[in-house]
Length: 109
Image 1 (cartoon, rainbow, N blue to C red):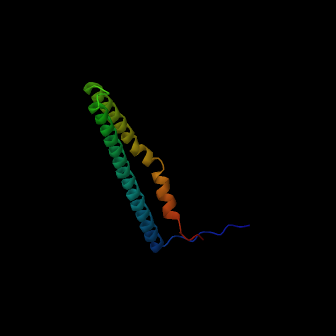
Image 2 (cartoon, rainbow, N blue to C red):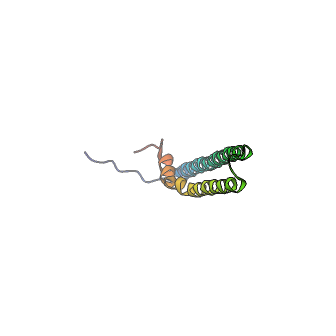
Image 3 (tube, rainbow, N blue to C red):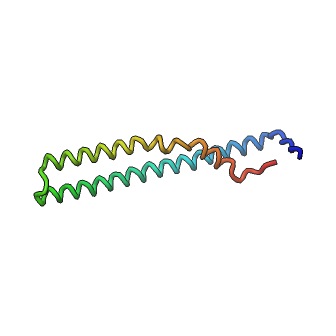
């Protein structure tokens, strides 16, 4: 079975390809930005909950102030480290996702 030759790309084809790639990039970037903000909100909410719990333990006399502060500092550091890893996680498949998105729905010869 012989493969059909692809016709040469016209200038209109190249412009359409650029539009599709640019749009795909924008969509992936918006998705990445939404993921970053979502993660930040999730971590801040979790830290706020931990802070509240620790204050309740302290005010009930179940822990000392220095122990509570140490626990909160360690919890904060852990959450910051997790957020530092986020750009790496997002970028792992970023380029492939842009390429896949830009090719979706493209007619083939």
